[in-house]
Image (cartoon, rainbow, N blue to C red; front, side, top):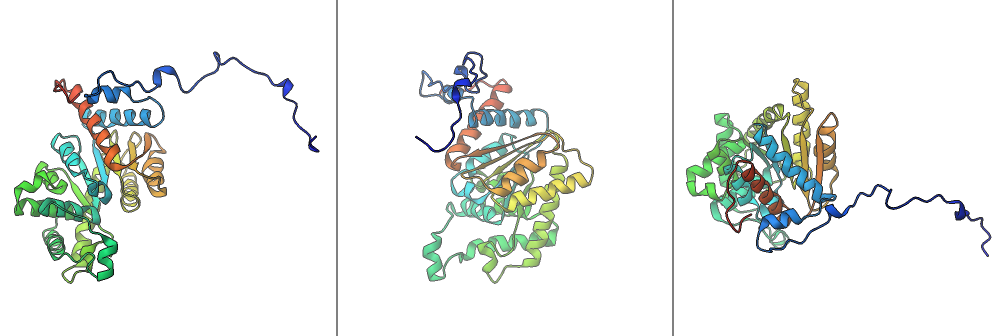
Length: 326
């Protein structure tokens, strides 16, 4: 027998499960589709619980924002491009689903390399030991020249990169997000943290020019955020730089009197990070709106989100969905 006193459970008051409010109900469960060859059946089968509900709500938010003429901005981390999501972003730009996109320096580098040469991303551990990591001269020459021209011409860095890419080869608009944005005349901004990117270690790097061009991009982004009321911001995989940049742009907008009481924000990443949660999901929506944090591998979760987004936008415009693509 125990030496300690025990609570007497015989006096516990119980209730009926039929009267209890249950958060998980039959109509919300996963429903395996009868046909296995269509996206529509798969999408409709997703459970309407937790992340499934959040993903549906976010699709509703981005489509509604554009229907009402409000912005949808994407903050795009480098890993999103490294996992192959550039063509998805280009499709969203071409369909008018995105009104603006922001990169940090590494994201711009991957986009440029994919656009011009069809490949990106080194084996860092192997190349670091030999001193070759980040030493690609063509990449550095292209980005550093664009930064100088942007500073001289009072352009944003992303704007200059998009223009340079199209000037080099107009086919890059099908491979580069920056080129597609420039061609479609939507702002693409690049927010550089000097010393973090491979092009900064090359002798032709001009810190003053890069700083001036990136500072202009901050002001361009802040102007977009000024008009964000009723819109949506998607942070796709940036853990530090872009959440910090976005928070400062929100502060500028509110300081200048812009109403930001009805905004939707969302983070997509494969783990939860402090800054995206605080600077994108929570703090900007404290005065109104809603924030979401969706966790999953970019190469799986983002194609699902993009496909559902474009499908719902097409349905609302009354477009007939082609067989096999619904």
